[in-house]
Image (cartoon, rainbow, N blue to C red; front, side, top):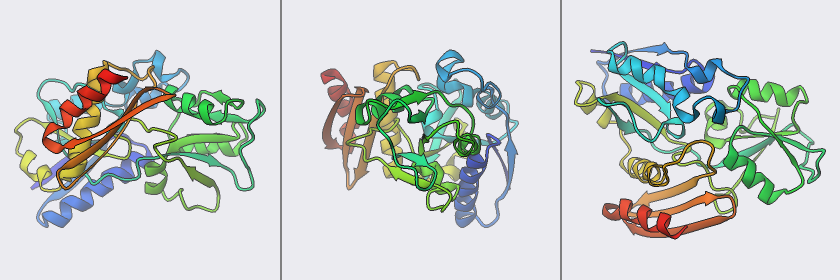
Amino acid sequence: MKIKIGTRRSKLAMAQTNLVVEELHKKFSDIETEVIPIVTEGDVVLDKPLTQIGGKGIFVAEIEYAVLNKMIDIAVHSAKDLPVSLESGAEISGVLKRGDYRDALVTLPNTEINNTSFFTVGTSSVRRAQNMKNLYPNVKVKDIRGNVDTRLKKLKNGEYDAIILAAAGLKRLGVYESDEYNVTAFDYNDFLPSPCQGIIAIESRKNDFVTPIVKEINDIDTFHSFETEQSVLRLLNTNCSMPVGAYSKAADGIIELTVSNSSDRKISGTAEIVNRFRLAEELISKL
């Protein structure tokens, strides 16, 4: 059996897809996989902030089209890039075990953060920008676009003194422990991440031949966190122009959830897994 897998063409997207391929081969020795890179609007339009060109869906639409039109069998996404709702006929049929959920500040060696207007931090996220300003109110926050390699190159070229990236992506690319950079990760109590950050999601057609195959590599605790954090976005009817943060941890039938719709107010709660959506509703109602 052959499974065609679509993803973005960036090094990170490919690295994450390789993790999915590895899990499939661990479970099914007779499966053949073919990875098909797909260019999305978000990969092409790099001269405008995300808020001006359509938000999260710009990294997904072309890949989702390929799934629904049977050009590929499954798609691999960074879950934090997914829109609140998928197209009719598509579903997230599984997720891998969650990686590092944290945001991280990346600088060159021997560079320490300077809480002045001369210190420039790059990010394309409203949430990250506001969180950064909460911790270091005097720094200059400047928009940055491009994949991880492009952003690191801009850091090396001196366009920024620091940039903020997802720790999971840095680890998957082997950058987190590299001597080329200093990486400082933020705890969620200080820097609440994007909902579903660190999660690799696998999209397929509903009730397709590949659905039971993907479910064999699905990490159920991570899937519960994915569903819960996606529900936060849905309840807030949000887009990437809002500084929404969420992080949950599911284990032993219990889920802990922290949510925020601004950079300076967070609220947390705990519930049984079966009540995860009700927990999200209760917390959102209190924001």
